[in-house]
Image 1: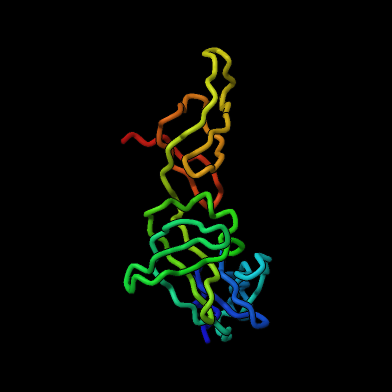
Image 2: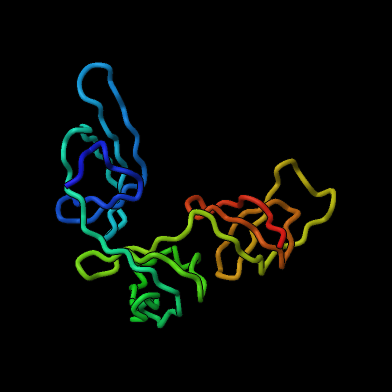
Amino acid sequence: MIRGGDIAKGTVLLNKGAPYLVVEREFHNPGKGAALARVKMKNLKDGSVLSLTVKTADMVEDAVVDEHKGQFQYNDGENYVFMDTESFDQILVPNEVVGDKKYYLREGDEYTILIWEGNPIDVKIPAKMIFVVTESENYVKGDTVSGATKPVVTETGLTVRVPLFIKQGEKILVNTDTNEYQERVNS
């Protein structure tokens, strides 16, 4: 059990027997009465989103989730295969669990895998990642409008809208929460 006031972004709570990951949390003090925590959370099994308001003094059931560091190896068609960096065991994460995060997985990179009741329920990816642009359209100088963007494709197949000056082979920083270009990276 966890106090409503101790809920933080990234906490996993149980609601009707399902694990929910807290994606947003804000505190509200109405002036009269108890302070409240407004929480937006995502179901780690089916992806649905739920909002919850809890008094900061009330207790909420939190899920016991194990975190394992795993190095991404490959996809076998049904599962994404990770190697546990401590025990060297394989961790199989089903394609449905990974979903669109597949565009952020690179062979050899290390990720945190959340396991609940013996089953992988999520793969945590960094908030920002650097990618190499593998496909990019060229543009003609003078064909620009202020703030114009174009789509590019990275080495993982991720499509991102970037400013027109980005070329194939360059590195870009991407916000993984919003799938938005942040800046060009000089290596």
